[in-house]
Amino acid sequence: MNAQVLGVSVDHIPCLKAWADSLGGIHYPLLSDFWPHGAVSQLYGVLRPEGYSERAIFLIDREGIIRYIDIHNIDDQPDNETIKRELMRLEGSPVQDHRPAPPEALPKGGIVMYCTKWCPDCRKARDWLQARHLEFTEVDIDANPQAAEQVKQWTGGKRITPTFDIDGEIVIDFDQRRLEQVLQDRLR
Image 1 (cartoon, rainbow, N blue to C red):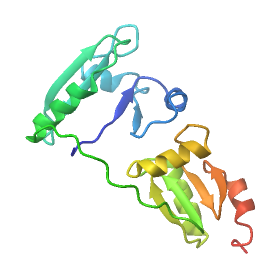
Image 2 (spheres, rainbow, N blue to C red):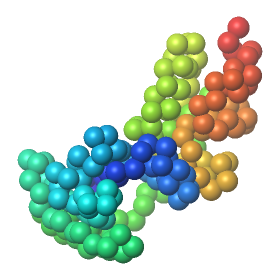
Image 3 (tube, rainbow, N blue to C red):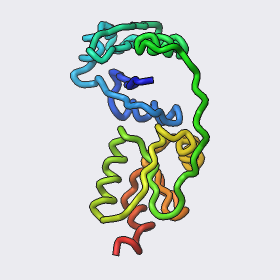
């Protein structure tokens, strides 16, 4: 599907990070609507007087027109199949289930950084490696389910990015001190 998923919450960034971590990580960007508190939620009519927002789903087309709204109780989970059908309807395509492509082998050897395109720490790590003229291979765990599963195995079930495989030595998160230890021979 040609769609971008965003999570928007009136919670502060540390709360969003803790929530995502409690789920084992998520693979879409979370945006904090904390300051000014609930400004986006208020624009979409879902900010409650108590200061929290309704659970809502908005499908917005390329022209910025809201084409679908689903507002429900905070404890209700939205039906993913309904949302998928609505997305496909907006794209003008029939709903289809696609079989996943066969998994490709994950890179081995050297510096391999497992990351996502939207992760701020991944961007910092990328800049850190490039500033030290270190060659590395980047694997997007949003685009590669096998890589996402590998990261979860290394991190105890969470999708923590960046995660590094440096010649078999695993470094979880952008831990500069640990990276310097593991890469000390290459940094000379």
